[in-house]
Length: 88
Image (cartoon, rainbow, N blue to C red; front, side):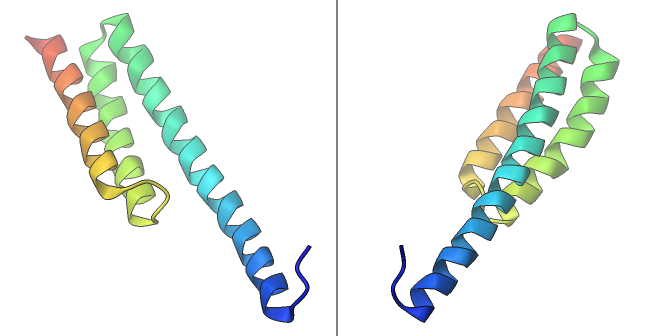
């Protein structure tokens, strides 16, 4: 347990950040899961719509610092590639 006032505040801040990060990451995972289900179903239209929803959520998660920006870029790139391969 923290012994100093500043350490107690840091502990409170860390808990708030942890919950916020968990919420953001959970939302991102849910959106990506929805997109993956649409891709596996082979539905190009549903996959495109899910991708339109997923890209901003992933980008926002990165902008908040929950995930690294290059990780977000890589996820977006790979998902877009998979959706585009459905059309071909």
